[in-house]
Amino acid sequence: MTDIRRLVVNRETVRARFGPAPARPVVRAVGLAVIANPCAGRYVEDLGILFEAGRAVGERLMPDLVAQLGGAAVSYGKGALVGLDGEMEHGGACIHPMLGRPMRAAIGGGQAIIPSNVKLAPAGAALDVPLGHKDNVWSFDHFDTMTVSLPDAPLPDEIVIVIAIADGGRVNPRCGQGPVR
Image (cartoon, rainbow, N blue to C red; front, side, top):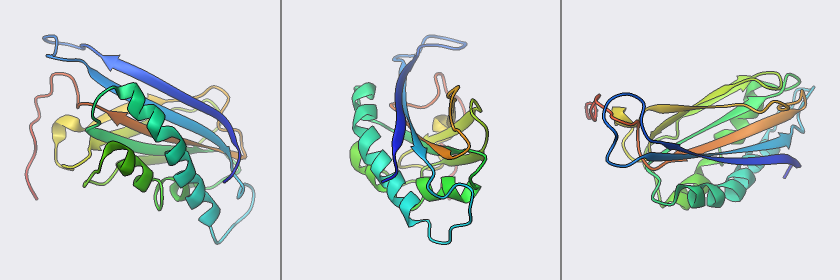
């Protein structure tokens, strides 16, 4: 795996926004791994090294995120910020082919796609990481977003891999489960 320069794990407890206090707060956890981009500055046909990097970061971060939650995860999401010497495809390679397996293993499954976002950006840029229900892609009440950034990452030759989980949807949801398609 490529070198990890920095790991960050944050826990957020959402108690209220507007309206009544929820029956219980929603806890969300996000992990960020700043890695060297071995493909920066050049075209690379085989991105397998980045597939493996995503898997390794997932295996490293997910136990910490699950511990932060303190309960069962019902929502998840992922993303990547790619430094300016890289390509969007480098972020996609980190989060798509192999990252999902360690995420699902750590939370005990997940039938729905893992929502994601990739952005080519300078250090300090924000990334909106979408969250969705782990089993029901049409659970509108679980559509959510966590915005993350690091002031010193990604450097031009780095990638920030982001993983997020939550033990609930939005506080005071009123949009419903959505249609079954």
